[in-house]
Image (cartoon, rainbow, N blue to C red; front, side):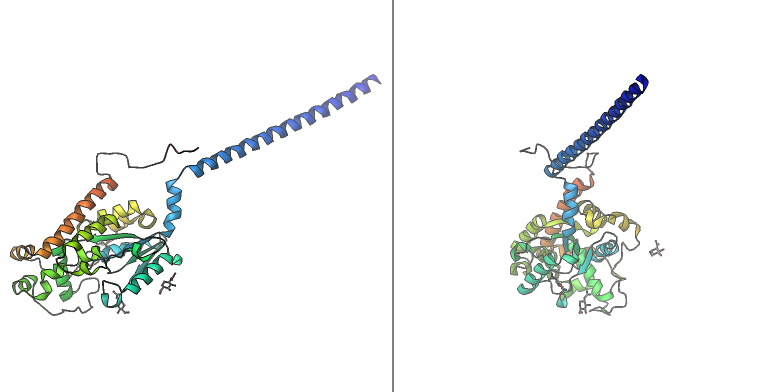
Length: 341
Ligand SMILES: *[C@@H]1O[C@H](CO)[C@@H](O)[C@H](O)[C@H]1NC(C)=O
Ligand SMILES: *[C@@H]1O[C@H](CO)[C@@H](O)[C@H](O)[C@H]1NC(C)=O
Ligand SMILES: *[C@@H]1O[C@H](CO)[C@@H](O)[C@H](O)[C@H]1NC(C)=O
């Protein structure tokens, strides 16, 4: 009898112990959940305060619009070829802007339409637009966002000679297309000797107006204001302007600044045999006397001033980006001392 009573008490005790243990475990579990939740909450607060440039860049860059207002005969076809090769893998669009009769200046209504269209066309973003058009200042055109401008610039005489032979002999890109001056066997030297219009130094007036833009003064050969404006736009409105002679570095700088679009571009350019895609056929280097004669012209001097200006600026940009300076670790930036907490 006594034993049975004891047994009953013992089992009651056992049940109570089990119940207590169960609740203790439950409480511990809840406490743990609570701690996890609290941790997540503070993490979230921290993240929203801490401006994470990587996350932001990813989101922002899906709206990226790059405009490459390419100057004829500066190696632009090679560069654009890289973009066309990468666009599928890097998920962006490349569009050629075909302006009637290759006019470099757009009418006012087309400027406005183009600016609105490019900035509002969501289905195309991110996108690289390229075409032979003068710089267009989007600030003037009341768009809500502004595209990023890039360009390449070439030594003015090299560009002129290349263009001269291109009109006569075409290139290896579209060898069967008959060019404007096809069949004309006159060399550049002879042309300069005879002071023909095709090698007139005035026809070197092209890179200045391309960077200067859509103002009337830009297109007056020898205009000093146009040169100053071109320099101003080059440093203030272009993300980067490379030189044809250093195409690989231009591509590397772009890859590091705009990886959203140009990731893998350097390697692609190095490994693809299309890197010299377009070469003017049967180009003859001009004689020293021809070079000297051209270099005496005001137009060459001014165009060359812009080229030298661009080159110095590009070298400066390149040093910082490609880390050829003493620094052994890549440059980064971050935010700190963010207040109020
Ligand atoms: C631009 O369009 C015109 C008319 O369709 C065409 O003849 C021309 O070849 C195009 N230009 C380029 C560079 O593709
Ligand atoms: C931009 O222009 C293209 C071609 O004219 C057109 O198909 C497209 O709908 C336009 N996009 C916007 C947003 O206006
Ligand atoms: C050039 O590229 C083509 C196609 O990608 C390839 O078949 C060919 O072997 C390459 N040539 C050289 C010299 O790399």
